[in-house]
Length: 236
Image 1: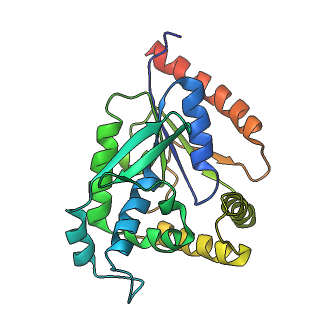
Image 2 (image 1 turned 90 degrees about the vertical axis):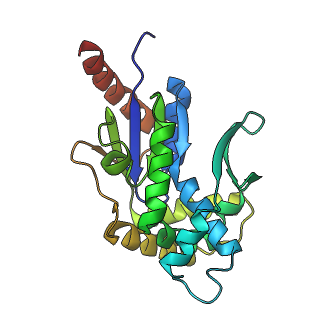
């Protein structure tokens, strides 16, 4: 196509469809998709497996920081399953990190400054060559504040809870709708109020509320936005 590659930052609330949307955008453009949420979930899983959450919902930061030194993450594309999988110290944990127990603790882990610093450093390294779609909660504000295209995705709490609940049921995971909704409320509160890199819409991000939109409608909206952004980038 002859168009220059850019970084696309996709931020938003939990379970508003960021990952699905980012994957579709990446596939259409031939870009790499990077799921930053999986990185925080993998660190959370490591903390759980180390027993740090056994007696408390909030283990001391010092214990988490010490654990970080033993954590190695890598992302690998699985062509058979057509997905990017995350590896924790050489072990594929893509399915384990999606469990409700991990969801219950991930916002606490993601609020820790030492964790965020390490993840942001890794994310910036992955995006150096551009041609990347990265989703998370601080991509447009902290990780890539100069990204050429920023989207802030949201949906109503009930819609997000219903989507997450259906996703878990389809994967054969135990789920209760009210528990899922309460978990999302809690994550929204922690994500938006934490001191380090809170969930915020970047000033130059385009807001998309997809509560009543199909994926195809979201892609039509994206194509128009992308064309306008890339046309401006090509002219400069």
